[in-house]
Length: 102
Image: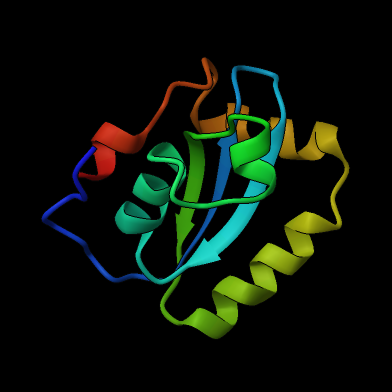
């Protein structure tokens, strides 16, 4: 898998899932395309790699990294049902959004 050529650099909070209703991974990045590619190509070791979590199911762009980090920390405190509701509000089928951001 080759890295994507286009890489918009906007701070984003994102949620990956292993499958619809599956394990979730929440992160923050300044380069969403590159970061999701790292998860998909197994370049990112750790929890997401171990549980095969690479489906981009939700993301939110921010004007600066500080606000993105605050939002990520807030969502991390949420229970799973709230996170699932957040995903399903904009992506009810838990479709992989990666192609949409390329």
